[in-house]
Length: 172
Image (tube, rainbow, N blue to C red; front, side):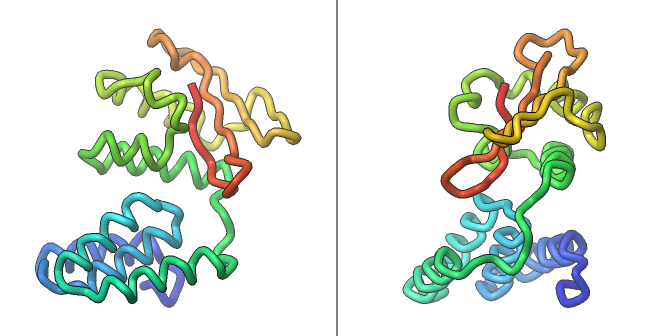
């Protein structure tokens, strides 16, 4: 699945395999690498940490992290539509609100939403998914969507690019 580019399916397969063979650190490393490649960095780190906890050589993991930072990715960065699709998919399938916040929400916006808003946020993201932004600022890399939400803080959702690493984040 991975070799033919079906990374979503490969992730699902590795997740199933990791529950069937939970003590195999190589499965966790492979899953962590897949997460990193689709830019789900915190999930990738969690899998790498699990591999080390299972006895995988931590020095090798440190070298792999340095190598990833030094080597330009052969995978393009997430574009706006892929980012929104990933955010929706993670909200639909994950129990971890904290992981969603770390992966998709800018640090300064994390305090503006809480778990009680999860369903409303999911609905707002589904609404803007596949649509053009209402406003784009090419110089800053910010795309803003106006939402028709009764929930305070979700009337306007912006997707901003981190200037340091090019990652996209939701801002409220």
